[in-house]
Image (cartoon, rainbow, N blue to C red; front, side, top):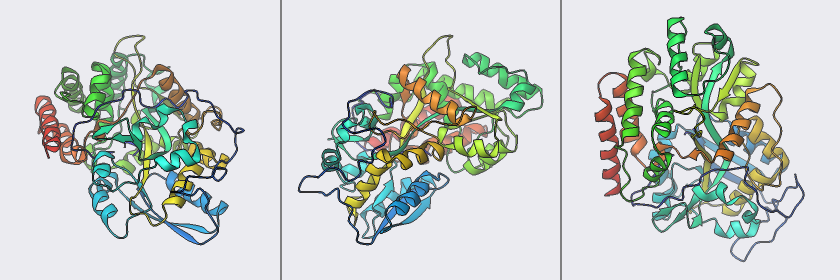
Length: 451
């Protein structure tokens, strides 16, 4: 998920705190809308020429997110000699499979990355620095690529090992008809106001939150949204990037977990949340079975089609009035395998995604997120009065407030599958305590760092 929806390291790393601010300025040297895919000559090690020989690019992507496939289809329309063979899996499956798949003789050319540090450490990811130079990616805002850099045991600095297919923001979608039904006239300004709306919905016979928690812990979305507000988000980021001494066992994480437990006990989540997967959650929300849904802007275009005019979006509110918004926000990260058979063509595709006018339009209309790329290129406009327009506006607001934080699920390669998901499922089922949850996640974290 964009999420979402991300995850891999063993050694301690140092955080470069600023994450994603797509709107930051940088100089550029070509006209807006120009396709820069093949205008520059590269150094001796790589080529930026696609050529005309038949090529099949192997792509390993995430199930349920149509952006990668839509971009691949458009690329093949524009470059008829290039075809894609796309394999898709759930994100947790990719987390487990990535090292083995990338080490095989059939390694994909382009792969949706869980996290990068271990993959870089094991020489499974291609260093993209030569392409950075050849394509002039220094014209991109530096903050756009910072999450995708890995130095020696360090994420956030060093060489470039990934690129984003869309630069997403997370928040809360809401059903406008149900909101009106319970008297909600505007998005809540504080966490307390949000909880008041949850209580009103429950009393009024409306499912307050439609959230999935099967296979992957979708309830980690509201959990981190709360954690980001209950403490210093820099501490959350320190933990994600494995800064020495960082811990998950903090008052903010405990308070967030206690709140999630309270919400579960109050019936604010579906009683069968542990049996609802991501697709099921979206389907139920589309049917009107839920006032709120914690999710990312990648669902905007889909919701505009399935629920036209009936969906709104807001950044999760602050704990105190007038506080700074904080949200999980990260690129939908893809990299090039070190054993890729067509690395130059893969890099050409990644550059095209950011610079071609049609590709940028697809990132917005299908992916629901900013296309990134050189800051002199315009972001394609969304239709007025759409949720897509609201999510793009929220992304700009988050950038202006410098409130982007990576996903806690990205802290290590196994933390999401080994601790966050099963422990969150037990918490929701009443089989784990908030104190036990926080300590179990930290214990797995320490276990993985010591390997």
